[in-house]
Amino acid sequence: MIYLKIDSMLFQRLSRVFSFTLISFSFILGVFPMQSIEAQILNIEKSLIREDEENHFFTDFSFAVRANNRSAGANDPVQLFSVNGNADLAYYTPKHSFMLLNFMDYLGINDNTFLSFGYSHFRVNLLRNQFFSYEVFSQGQYDFQRGLDQRFLGGGGIRLRLIESEKLSITAGIGAMWEHERWQEPYEEALVREINMPKTSNYLRIRWQLNEQISFNTIGYYQYGLDPVFQRQRHRISNDTNLNIKLSQRLSFRCALNFAYESDPIVPITPLIYSLSNGIRFNFYK
Image 1 (tube, rainbow, N blue to C red):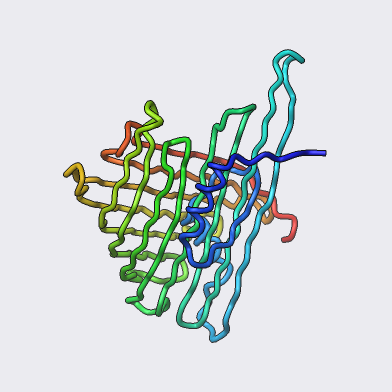
Image 2: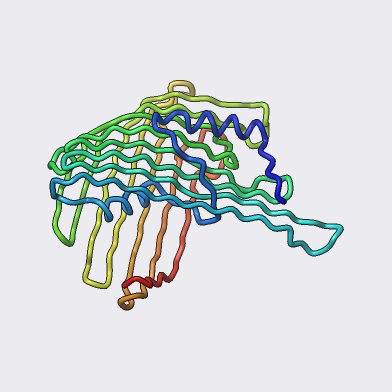
């Protein structure tokens, strides 16, 4: 029999984060690498984006739990517990799209937390097939190991389909948002910093099918805001890039890189974080 103990403070933080999104649906577990919001949107659009007059509903859930107590000796036990997963919902009509994306990743060893990250993201794209379309979004997020207790944001903007062909797609987004963040100092637990500010929110996305074997997609975000408390200019840059090489009918190679950079973090943390992964995928169903 396995007993799960959830810290009350952690539970309260999770409740605050996921209640921000109006359609909050995520109690999700697993042990897979952290995924980006753009990667999830890309997977949904690959499955659903069509020009016909039908409505399409998409769901994607993953669920996994891992626990073990393997250790070197009886006097030095090591207990590992991790939960991770996603719950994604999307609804496409001939004119509009609606998405709700949720993700959670937790890793604990003995009584120490090594990773605790998650978000809930809601997005609407109105007149999605037009050259000019409109986006509205909201998000709740936490990253306890980096000191981010909560990040709530909401905003909107316009989306431009600059190039749309069978092999190449280039899309740009120009918008604005309001962001609230609550951070804890890494070396002074009692010191908490909160900030509220308007920001620009812009992106450029490229999807390119070079040939039948190679596909490439990347998206870069740039956000800018003037901190009203500390009177500082804050820049945030992030990117998600994926390369897929088809080796055979069933075998393919995948490379993914994502990073995020904060020009002036509110608390003293690493300004640049990144993730690089390479892997082989085998498809049994072709």
